[in-house]
Length: 114
Length: 255
Ligand code: HEM
Ligand code: SF4
Ligand code: FES
View 1 (cartoon, rainbow over the protein chains, first blue to last red):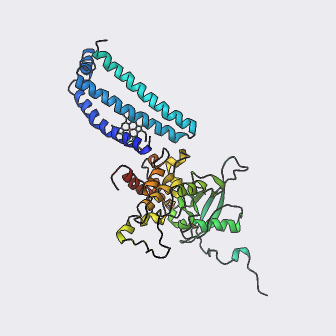
View 2 (view 1 turned 135 degrees about the vertical axis):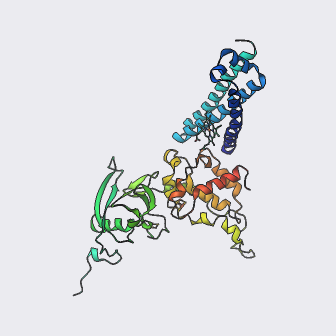
């Protein structure tokens, strides 16, 4: 992929994350901190689909942004054809793994596997 | 009998009548047989107008001719004498001792350039990256054949790039750039500023070509807005601004 397209995604995910993380924080402020971390309260949040969907989107946005950021750092740290290829594919793999692992939690709650 | 002048009396040297003097510390390093950089110290008298380059040449003339230093124009035009002076990349011929406000002046070779010897560094990478961005007008016609007119430009069009055409390829910006320090493939602020200089020239038709060259995993996006390049540029080129203006084309804010 062209680097400019990747970086447009990088800046775009950052901007979108600002908006969604703000909503996420505001939602958390509707309850006390300890209360919001209680088992039933956490399960209820995941079962409220619009909110769970937003958390999923934040997960995707920040996984893409974070691992692309890591790719950038690693590309600047060391150079070499094989190393750079490993960094690029490694970061995409880590990105997908993290999204899959986070999504698994949301899906498990909503399919009654808790 | 007419006396032949001794080396010290040769014309061209600054007449040092001053009682003021500084300690000039010169980094000595020969990659062929030294493992670390060492420093030699010299007491050099100076006047209000004495430049760091003149002080180094004084050392070469009277104390140690083997100090390696590159210079030519002595007037901030050729871009040869870039070095680290008291910790900051500067042109030795464009830096007066009196402006440094210090009794000790330390000169070292530029960072991010391989050292040939002492203060002289290799410019291969700078010339390669400069060449890579095609630093010339790209178009099919020419103004030197008969039946063609000169390519006219309005003062406003000139204003778009003229500041960036002042670059003398001294490499101080590349020496100050933190990305250059770790990314051996980064194209660097000097070449990026020149990419902007040609892209913004109304006579040039090579914009798409040039933008594609710098849109690479070690291209323009590896600039992280440190801005050190613009702080050290002796010609007011402002490479950091050129880079952001170029990004404007790539992100669709300019056309
Ligand atoms: C929503 C708030 C955020 C904004 C506005 C934001 C913005 C940015 C921007 C503009 C860059 C590019 C910087 C550059 O090119 O120099 C960047 C890089 C980066 N971001 Fe974020 N980011 C945010 C959150 C995050 C989070 C939560 C993570 C971790 C998961 C992260 C990880 C990174 C990394 C690792 C880099 C690469 C470092 C760099 O290029 O300097 N960012 N971010
Ligand atoms: S942009 Fe300035 S600092 Fe960089 S090479 Fe050109 S004149 Fe030197
Ligand atoms: S000697 Fe030419 S720029 Fe300093």
